[in-house]
Amino acid sequence: MTTASRGRIDKRQSILTAAFTVFARRGYAEACVKEIAEEAGVAKPTVYNHLNDKENLFRHAIEAAADEVMAANLEVVERLREPGDDLRAALEDVAHRLAQVCCGERSRSLRRLTYGQVARFPELIELVQARTSDKVAEALADRLARFSLAGRLRSCDPAVASGQLLALLTGPLENRSHLGTRKVPATEVRAVSDAAVDTFLRAYAAG
Amino acid sequence: MTTASRGRIDKRQSILTAAFTVFARRGYAEACVKEIAEEAGVAKPTVYNHLNDKENLFRHAIEAAADEVMAANLEVVERLREPGDDLRAALEDVAHRLAQVCCGERSRSLRRLTYGQVARFPELIELVQARTSDKVAEALADRLARFSLAGRLRSCDPAVASGQLLALLTGPLENRSHLGTRKVPATEVRAVSDAAVDTFLRAYAAG
Image (cartoon, rainbow over the protein chains, first blue to last red):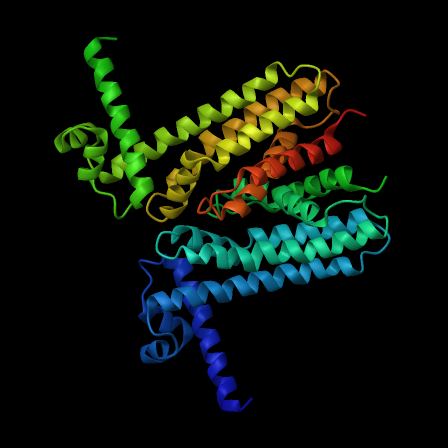
């Protein structure tokens, strides 16, 4: 890749990051391209040059943010490749980190913005869901399948088990965050993730 | 109550039901008071007379729909007062009925409309959540507390157990319904609710 095309990709990325920040701050209707250009430190025509119009900017900013949340979640699940001897401790660590991503500013803004624009951008719900919850559920199912095969969890459908562990985690957190509009205190995040793992292991521990 | 005030309440109720139907059909922005009046079979000034303006109409229509969903859910949970000898069968029945309410047209429209208007009506999320998920979680916790005391479930925090059973139920359904934008097939609803009860009982069955 040439330095010029690398530079172009970096600029596009920084415009998308700035756009997401401004959409999260103002909401879709109130956000304007001028503020996005200022946030990205580029001229307004540069934004149009890269991303046409506000709708296109929104779509791509949401997509980029979903990719970041997905990467953060997948990195957490990767920790289960080397769980060590204490499976409970490993699951508690991973569940707590996933809960923190879920309650983090970026993830909450992503949900708030996507839900809030469901009428205008109905296709974004599926895109965000495919990249965030579906991808992490799949990755987690892979790890649980290995534990099950190794006799560290009972024999089970790993996709169901993975979906349930994530539901035990995110359900109570979504309730407490009022769909991303309230920040959940750290002690509550920890209590929810520990309770999720406890129930999960009671249901799925080997024999 | 006089016949006149009874009639006034009935008329208000039918305007709210019509308003919810039209908002669900068109979305907030596209819905108009003229169509709501037609749907309710009243004159347009009658709508304004009862409910001022479109914002007020929306707020009260959402509130009334949340009350209906809440009533439907509470009626289902009530069935656990007389669970009979087979606790698993009773929980499966109740879980399946709750899942059906959750996937029903009214409940899905309620979520879609509330999420979609979070920027304009942020207070509605808490109102809807308080009346639907919080109320049903409380009622379910009461029933689980009794089962725990009677030795039919292990000793547990009934609020946590109730929140987890509901999370096991609604998490996978929300995923499959893409936040209320897709209708979930009946076989999937049944599979999710049976899996939820199975995991719940593995985690919470008495010793």
